[in-house]
Image 1 (cartoon, rainbow over the protein chains, first blue to last red):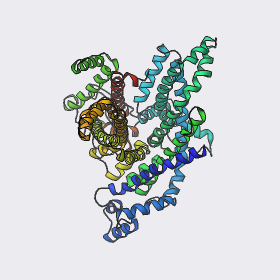
Image 2 (image 1 turned 45 degrees about the vertical axis):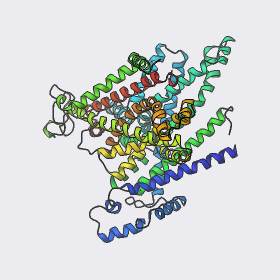
Image 3 (image 1 turned 90 degrees about the vertical axis):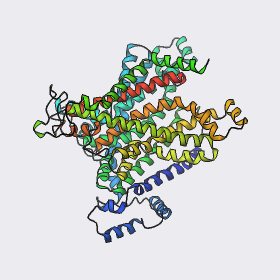
Image 4 (image 1 turned 135 degrees about the vertical axis):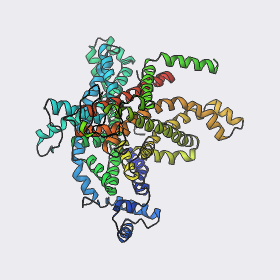
Length: 314
Length: 282
């Protein structure tokens, strides 16, 4: 296992090199002169010259890239132009809401998606199956951010059951945190639950068609025992992989959901950074989320091996 | 079976597939709305009319008006133009980019590893965040949205083409072509590429759907096409501010967005079923 882990981590290195290079190149994609764009039209030539030197933009490209790498390796993501603090500190301050939102949405997606897929697969072609799969198709097509607005209108404005926007830390006030988190988590998790339902259903159907399921039925086990004890565990393996992919989509979706519900997370951070041309913060957010995604997939692969002993470490 | 007969059979199967027919009808409907936007919209979608703001749907304003008094129906109809332009162009660019990169990677063992590592790296970014970051560098505008989304979605197509090429490269007829002395480029273009058309069509309709959605998200976040351009994302964003008084402003462009996504997803599902029954999700 250790050797496998080491090999997997080594395989991450080239991916992360590309990730860092893309973040680096971002500054060079700015049309015209990046420094005058960053400083705005009021900057004096002296300020522009100083900023260019401070950013190292007067050096050759390969030297800038090398410097960028050594800086990142030291854990230094630079200084925000507007927030008056290092980017790493800004990221740490804003990470909690995004993490809570992403994992709550994942929970919603799995809790709705997996049982729906299994119920649909238990009797393929039945009314339940058709209704659930139609709902899943709509769920895939409905844009999450628009769904959030409709939820706000229905549950906050009309019915007044839940707050329309805002955030409370789960560490400070768990009950308020829950009330604030219900609508964002459901609207973010819903379309992913549709995806998970479709995959769970097809994995389940595949497993249910196997010989050992027929044997289990033939020896007189109840349909519930066959479904849950025999089929479910084997259908779970591909579903776990999908959950890894889902995480990536949820991290991206969390950005949009945060804007709708006014949640002070990484999404609000990157959007305000984009609007203020605070490039170190933009670089920091995409670096951190991409790295998180890569690490999550590593963990998912590990889980995969743990769940299914047939999959070796090779 | 001759080639023409095979094609006729495939077309018949397409026409019988309910998903393809429904999906295609929806997409055609949206395309017609975009083409004849001037004719079917009742007002100028850019004209501000503050005296007439936040009117609920009436016979004068089918879908009501927004906070600036713009007619929502006309905004939705014109918004389809931006969506389809971004979606279609992104689909074409990602296909071309994907074919170029995928063929190189699948066909040349030397280029395979570096190209695929770059694709892996690009795919490590959550799609919408990479698009946001690219928009941050390039600034708002339709061309920049298309650029950002093409960069974001090309790796998927490149991976698909590469794996298709790898599956075909060692088949007998390709070896035969090589034995006859055809050059690599000719083999790639004449013998391998045609086999990628099916997977490309399926992938293309899904990328079209993603791109339309992503364009709307960027517009909604205020980093997509400029705010004065009527696009579904921009209208939903302005509806967000007035959701308490006027739910219709965000409701209808969102429905249009959902409908287009549904059409393209149905089309993609149906094409996949008819082109390759083995890929079918039961």
